[in-house]
Length: 313
Picture 1 (cartoon, rainbow, N blue to C red):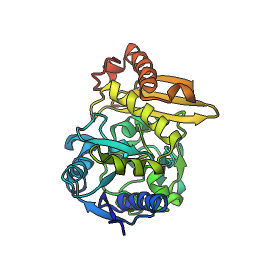
Picture 2: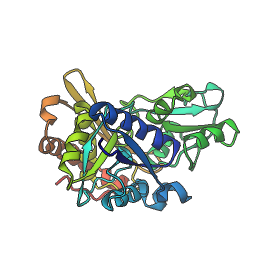
Picture 3: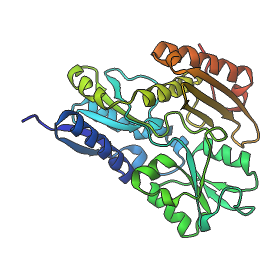
Picture 4: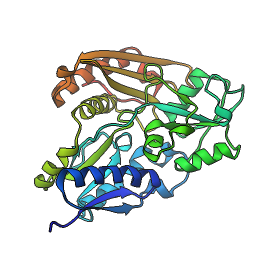
């Protein structure tokens, strides 16, 4: 009998839920047992605004270190949490089918964003979401919020906040889509690069496992999410930069919207592209398309609005 695959995961309810989906897919694809190895990250125990803690990378480092030490065989990340810089010895082995990319509002009394009263208190710890909220509704009182999905929803139910903005993907995976009171269209509200996608990371010195893991990958999800990540990488956006990048398949084409905001949401620049899917089939093709997008954003003044050091090169 084969030894079980050890799948490293953050210990939160959402993380173990989505890692459980990956484990089920691996069991079906390989016939091997998969056991979850919970790992506590700095992002799970530290408090304060995420950008001040080192950005989304605080959720990733401990998982990667455990994988490199051989404490697990593979790890699962929310792709939006995964820094774009490569790590020696590790590679993304698969991007499973993607969950919805959209952001949603979870508000008291079933309110939508447009229905929230003037001065309503809305919680978000994301610089991008804060900028987008202030751009759409500058009259709102937008405040920082931390905690897992259940904690944020409870703060709305308890009246500490009138609403909060969450990723639809997390609610979907936890069976909580009924908590959403408004859904933001990607054409108006681009989300974080890779949002809704999972990244299964493996060691480069284990090609046999990489071949196995690749079986659960989804070609469309991989192509679109990696194009988004390449735009983000070339922008070299700091962890506090309000940047939204979303690509989605539209028939035979892939449509991308990238938008960079000032922190207060008063200004924004955007670039849009629609390319045939076959024009984005390789890493080099996605890089070329991303260079074009980033060059347009920088020419339009994105670097003056946000903490960017990208050159498009």
